[in-house]
Image 1 (spheres, one colour):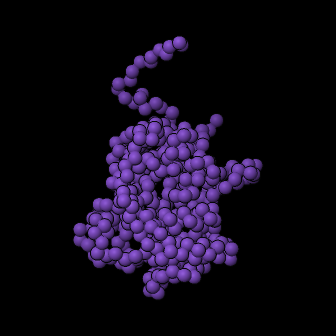
Image 2 (image 1 turned 60 degrees about the vertical axis):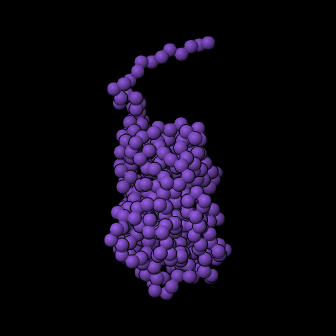
Image 3 (image 1 turned 90 degrees about the vertical axis):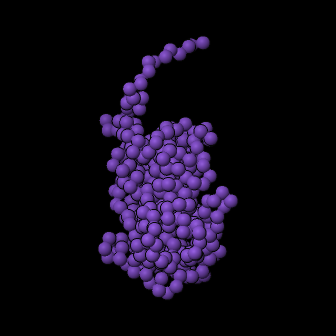
Length: 359
């Protein structure tokens, strides 16, 4: 009898200043490594997006954060696909030249990678994205015209038959910001990440289809002291390429288990099939982790990936977790877990069994 597919969820929360995954796709090496020792890797755009850099992981499922929370809670399933028709929304506020740069990037993914894109839509009003920083230091943001975003998405879904949506919104340029300088030097928090999450959450919540966002920004001046972890964002005029690649095979959301006998339902993935969830040890307050920790999934907390904002450990929430020092150690733990081997058996200090009292 064949074993069930070994399924791992990898989470690096957005906007908390994670040492690994808090920058420009720098958690992608972690995802690549984990994908080699599991059958199915479920993760989110913050992990896989690297501006113009990306990597094809055939067994990885690219799931937007709101959809991941719904999946972890058991409300939605994930249905793998061979290909999506990706619709593109461009913010009316994007300047003509910068808009053309993004359209050329989209055409390049069609010609070079063979992606299936629909015609694009420009919003009927500027989205007016504003960036915010919470008192804790976490990044977030607002959209001044959410209705314009939703109308654009509806046109793509109804007229162009898009079943995944990429959004490019004009973000504020803040070249002189001390926070931006710190981020480019490998410190602090990604100031864009919180607002990006708001944009994609809005579309996924309203239309239940995959969505991801790429900010439109003017290129920054060269910085000889640029951090290695921030370097991917300095390569060109747009971050759109990785978003289109991710959405091209992002799983569709199954919002009900009504027709369990249909051929496609046999491919659907539900929360109870998750074997392990890997998170930074100080970023354990997210909805997905809280849900999956109640379902019997093995929680693996990586101590080396510290977050600089709002530290929440598994112990603070009463979550039973295996703490490991590094992602390398987490890989070893998952290999043993998949093989059905107790981690204790790999230690030289294996203790004897103790007798339990019946009284």
